[in-house]
Structures are given as structure tokens and as C-alpha cells.
Amino acid sequence: TPYLEVVDLGLKWLKHHQSPDGYWSCAGFDEMCGTLGDDVICSGTGNPLHDVGVTGMALLAFLGAGHTPKEGKYQDTVKKGLKYLADIQQSNGNFGIETNPQYTYDHLIATLAMCEAYALSQQRFLKRPANKALEYMYSIRNPGGAWRYAPDHPQMISAPNDTSVTGWAIMAMTMAKEYGLAFDENALEDSILFFEEMTDPVTGRTGYTESGTRPPRESGREELWPDDKTESLTAVGVLCRIFADPDLLRPGNEDAVKKGVQLIERIPPVWDID
Image (cartoon, rainbow, N blue to C red; front, side, top):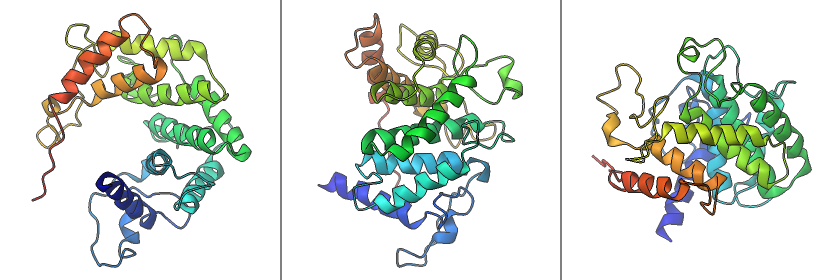
């Protein structure tokens, strides 16, 4: 189908921009340009401190399309990416670079990728790094709360939890619960309670660190990425509610999902092809 063809084109691009060492480089992926048969150099390079997180996201794209370390035409690409993550994982289970004050993003995304790879393939060599990553994830959770940045990040004083980081943790926990990996029931419950606190019961909008607010924007990027043109965190909230409670039996969950979906439907993607 056309949908599957488009997905495969994206996966093909990712395959050809993977480093020989197995990771995807935020700042250097353009060095791999030309392997698809043209001389076009890709733009949009990013911060090399987040290579681990980007690698996790790339792997999730392959895994979501059914390509695992043991099946699919991109299985070698997936194997290389997972091997990279396993090789750089620290003894305490952390995938991230702790000198990066936002390394929790990278760790949690890589954790989800490792958990999903194990869930889909059931390969034993993936279980240990997945469990180590989950245990480390639980150890850096804010007591009685959820997740955000590194403990010494200045924003942790005023807002120690946010829905963006915590969303990745919830996804990893729901995967862990379903497939027999390290699971902390209290951590999942506290995270869901945090999302409920961050969701406006009237509008259904999920905020970042305050209830029902618009997504945050980096200073100077407000005009390029207007916050009123997206419901990204509402989408995170809806997704997490569904994965944590598939039958929507938790009180208020079904109503929150319906309202969130209605908000998301009002702002469909707009593709600028010029």
C-alpha cells in the first residue's frame, strides 16, 4: 500500500544514515549522505549529546514496522543499533551521558527501544540490558513523583516532573509489565496520577509542568514552532492512558482520551512541500 511504501522509504533513509558503529549521529548523520545514489546532503543536524536518544528513536521506527533483530529486511540494521546501546550501557544501567543535564531523555528512549526489541524478538541477550535500564530508570525517579531532567538541573527545583520525559517512562513500564521485565507498580501509578494532574478536565489538554498549558518552546524558536499549532503533549497523554489502561476502565480515563483526541483532530499535520 502507499502507506507502507512511505514508511519503507523512511526506514531506508535511516538505514543509509546509520553510523558503521551502529548509532545515529545527531550532528554527523550527513556524513553518510550519498549512499542512496545521489549527492544531496541532508540538513537539520542536531546536538551530539543526544546520539543515544536519537538511536533509540530510530530503532523504535524499525521495531514499530515489524523489523526485529531476528526478522525483517532491516534486521541487521536493528542488530547493530541494539549492540551499540548494549555496548555503551554503564554498569549502573544508564545509557545516557550524565554530563548532559537532559540525559534522562536519552536513557528513557533507549530503554524503551531495548524493551520493545526484547518483547518482539524474545531474544535472551536483550533481557539483561533491558532490565538494567529499567532498574536505573526507577532509581532516578523523583520520590513519589515522575521524571524530568538530571537531579542538578536548575529547573528541577521549581518543576521536578514533566509529561514529556515521563511519557517515555510510562511507555517503557507498560512494555515491562506485559513482557515480564523489571516492573514497578508504584512508579506507573504515580506517573499516571501526574498525567491526570497535568490534564485540564474541561478541555482535555495535557500540559508540560502545569495543568492544561501549551507545549514549551526553546527561547527564540517560538515563531518557527508556534505552540498553538500542536497538541503534542496532549497526544502523549492520550497514548500513555491507552497503553496503561487499554480498556479505559480507570475512572475518568475514557473521557480524558475522547477530549484529547478531539483536540488533536483540530490541528491535523500540514505538509509544506515548497
